[in-house]
Image 1 (tube, one colour):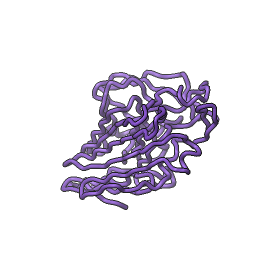
Image 2 (spheres, rainbow, N blue to C red):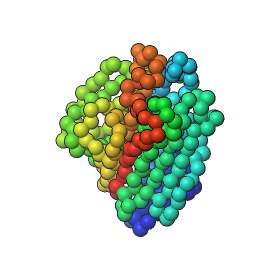
Image 3 (cartoon, one colour):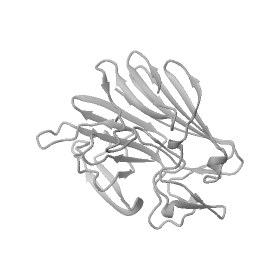
Length: 284
């Protein structure tokens, strides 16, 4: 476990997948991150790259060739290099290699930076196209926060979407994006999830106006802000005590997708020798 810290927060990270595993509020010793209980879900904050969600038939077509990728890609299962570290900042890097190119035929560099700024942890991504041809990819975050779900006599745990009155929620069918969606009306911008809310799978949100989501649980508050992502996922496992807030640039394949990688909804098309940036942060 690698650690960065300041007077407000202590943050623990794994080299495998450059995964965030712990965020402790030093004021009250509270752990905000789900501790990967394998009875429910054995991760805390995997990176989704170079795809988000599942591919139709587990494969895609690029330049006339067929390639296979697992759900959410490969980055979460690879040891990143550490290229910079200070007391309050650490930078991880993953570069294309022989192992990645057999399933993802692009020359890329992915950097993931964690930096503490007082009571805020900022997480930033930089994808660089090292080649001349277009680089196609998606990227998503998947952090899981401890969350006390509402019981019959308790409605104090909720998510707040400050700029939204309605959530446009799309459905998954066998891990693929369907065309059906619901409009979920919020109560004063607030969503009160319970342990059954995600029994059908993740909520996939499009057209959010809010660029931040606020968790309020057990008289504690966390502000989750994001930039550079077009979509947002919310997910949990029934009977667990965590909730995932997931900014995505990219989506699972549609049920009727034609397998062409360049035609996936939300795919990034990055010019040669160019960079793409996005970030999210939590403020406690």
